Structures are given as C-alpha cells and as structure tokens.
Length: 450
Ligand code: 5AD
Ligand code: SF4
Image (cartoon, rainbow, N blue to C red; front, side):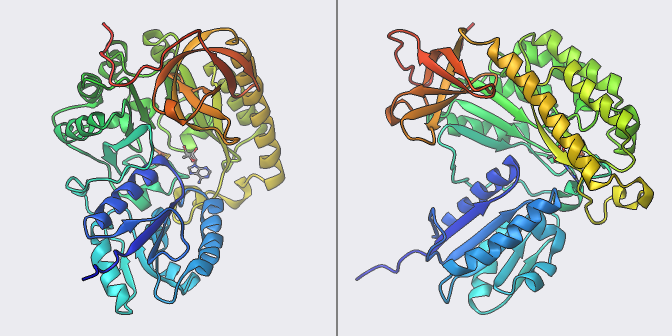
C-alpha cells in the first residue's frame, strides 16, 4: 500500500529576526501535523508569506511578491499571509489579493493547521486576536540557520514610540519563563549549535516575574557549549546597573551590540517618545563601553521625522560620531496608519527631497566612520566562526565576535567551526582573511574559558 504524500509548505520570510524565529515556529507547528517543508514555492501545497509592517516600503514589496507567487500556485494551493502586515490589515489583505485565503497575526500560528483545513473546504480564515500567554512553548521550531539559534525570549512591546506600528501588530510585552528559555538553549546546544541570539522587541526589559535580563544572560551564558551569546534589540532605558554588570561577568556575551538610537536630537527624541535625551543615550553608550571596552556598536536611525530641522539632523550626525557607531540601518520616516506621528501638524512634514538628502549624508557619515574603524583592524588576529558559503562559492563567510564579516578560503566542511584568522584586506565594510598557520578547525562544543 502506498502512503499518501505529505502536504508541502513553503514559507517566505520578510522583516526582522523575530519573523525568522516565528517562521521556524510555523514550520514546527505544521511539521507536527504531517506537513513537509520545501525550499521553493513552485508546486507547494501551502505558501505562507510572513510579513513586516514597519515601513510602507516593506508592505509594498510584499503586495508585489504576493502577485508574483500566484504564478507558482497549483489549482489547490493555499496561500496565506502571516505576521505584522496580516495583523495590521486583517480582512483588507483579502481584498488586496483575492488568491489569499488565510490571514494570521503573530499570536495565531497555533491555529494554522485548523485554518488550513478550513481553507481546503473553501473557507477564508482570519486570525488576528492577541494572546498574551502565547509563547509557543510546546512547539519545536524547525531551525533554518545552520549556525545561529534564534531564541525569542519576549514578545510584543510596551513602549509607544510615536512612529512605530509594532505595539499595534505584536501587542503587549510578555516574557517567557527563564527555565523555558534555558531548556530550549540546552536542546540546541546538544545539536552542535554554539551561538545563541536572544530575541525581543526591547529584549533587555525581559522580566518573567522573577528574573530580569541580567539573570537571563547569566543563566544562558552558564550553559556548557554556549560560546557566543548575542541579543537584539535592546532599548537604552532598560540597561539597569544589574544588566550592565552582567556583561562584565558573562564571557559568552559578544562584544557587539545593536542599540537603536533613532535620532541624536533631544527635541526629536522627545517627539518620538523614546524616553531618553541625546545626553542620556550617550551616557548609556559610555556605561556599556566601561564594562566592555572593545564593544562594537551598530544602530538604527530615522531621518525626516515630522518637525526635524537641519539643526536636529546635525545633532544626529554628531551623535553618530560621538557614539562611535560601526554601522547603522538608516531609514526615512514612513508614516504608519494609526500611530501618533501621523497626527502631528501637516506643516511639520519633512519634504521627501530634504529627507532623501539627509539620508544620503547620514549614510556617508556612517560609511566613512565604518571604513576608518575597519581599516585600522587590518593585520589583527580575530576569532571567526564560519557561517556559510560566500556568494561566489569559492570562499566562506564567517563572523567575528564583534559582528564583522570575514571571507576566507575553504570548503563546506569548515561550516560551524571556529578559527583564528588574520585580517588581510577590507572593502571598508567587509574583510578578507587568512587562517593563521596550521590552525585546526575547532569542533564544538569547546570548554568555556576561565
Ligand atoms: N519609519 C521609518 N523607520 C521606522 N522604524 C520603525 N518605524 C519606522 C517608521 N515608521 C525603524 C526604526 C526601528 C527599525 C526596526 O525600523 O529605526 O528601530
Ligand atoms: Fe517600536 Fe519603540 Fe517598541 Fe521599538 S521600542 S518596537 S521602536 S515602539
């Protein structure tokens, strides 16, 4: 007797690492119901697009992509939209793209198998209720990153930055129990993973009712086999003394942090409701550098926020220099429906050409600074973890503890191994390197130093 083929599911992910982790949970939920994951949309029984709503541009890309994916659908393929855009637009997605049958927000992935059954009977399914208890604790994610494990430790956001749609699409902040996080990390370490990335919208405000983020860093850092520990993204106001002190104690915590600044002008920061001034932000940077002197910092910056003057923008440029950022994601303000920033007086709107020019100047400032910092590193020796084949196939791409990208010669057998590498060249943003003589790949897990 031949077995029925398992239904196949393809998930395409847009946006942040939280979405990457959520897609892994969706795959896990569906695998438990007999679905098979596939890497291409052609002929898949189910196609899910996990979306981002942070800027209008991100949404427009998804709308375009939904049209393209239609070509890959069989007569009975079910197409679903999940994630932040699904939560934000709900039924409006079904109007924009009639070939979509499911719309499921970030707290609804447990319902996917049931919704898919309904869709097979011709029902359109919408699930956009928040569930403040939902952490998908019983779902085993299907990990898609060969080297790093993305571990959500917190969902939602309780800040109300006036430009941001996230509190509307991901709901209130809640933290997983520390014991559950530790259990998951132990499981991934057993499979040979040595790099852990803790995820949360304001991850350092983590609090499970008993433990704070300092406890979490200590607990995860103490797990045998965790060699690199990262987290993203912290909020400057949630670096308590305890949390900062934990950085000095936990050796696995890497010397790189992505710390969103958004603006270097106190006036703009106030209007963004970021809850810190320029001086407070820079003081936070200084405190972090005191406990981690070799800390590499990257950031997010928005230009063209309503009411931003030339002087405000100059403050942003000078703060980028003062904070010593090594890189930045830079964005033009994008008004998001329903957020307080859209209710600011129309005359405060920054014209698009002004915002574009500011964006270009900001990018130039960041690039120049990054280049200068990187060129100064040439000739130094660093620890590199090999992550994947580089795009041209002949080289491997690895990363340093402080998040620099290094290309080295080698083949796939070196994946997920650590090496000492000398930095021999730089484009200004990435490096080429050479293995230091007869260095043997160090298979994991390694004993922790100290
Ligand atoms: N417009 C432009 N950029 C935004 N971001 C968040 N909301 C907006 C918006 N409405 C940026 C912030 C945030 C990053 C993830 O996206 O810089 O840190
Ligand atoms: Fe958005 Fe601010 Fe929350 Fe970050 S902290 S997700 S920018 S509201």
